[in-house]
Image (tube, rainbow, N blue to C red; front, side, top):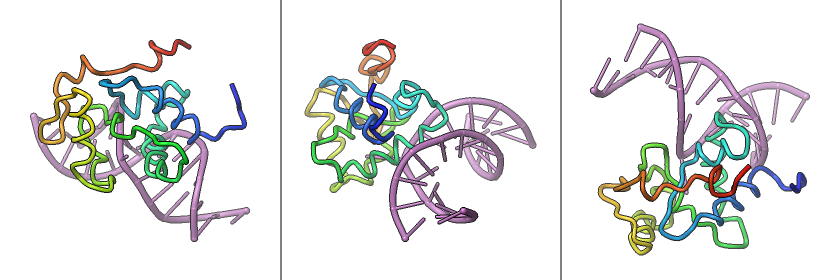
Length: 112
DNA sequence: TGGGTGACCATAG
DNA sequence: ACTATGGCCACCC
C-alpha cells in the first residue's frame, strides 16, 4: 500500500469505503490499520476530516457501543443522525439500533 | 524538541 | 453494576 499516505489518509480511505446503510467503529478501523489501541487517532482523524477535499462519511463511524459520540462535532448536532436515518439506519437517542446487523467490518469486507 | 491532545477501548477498583 | 484511570500513537503548537 502507499506508505506515503498519512494515517489520516488511510482512515479517510476506509471511511469512504463504508457501504451505504452500514456503520463501523473507530476501533475496527484502527485495528484494520494495525493499531487497535490507536482508535483515538481514528476519531481525531475524523475531527480533521473537514479538511479533506472529498466528503468523508464520518457519520458512518461510531464508537464500539454504536453510540454517536462524535455527533457534537458535526456542523449540526442532528446532521449525523439524520444522515444515518436517511441511509436506513435507525438511531434513537444517539444510539444505533441493530448495530450488530449494520456493523461493517473492514477486516472482513476488505480482507487483509 | 517536547509536550499536550483526542469523536476510544480495556482493565481495575 | 458503574466510575475512574491507563494506554496508545499520530498530529499540532
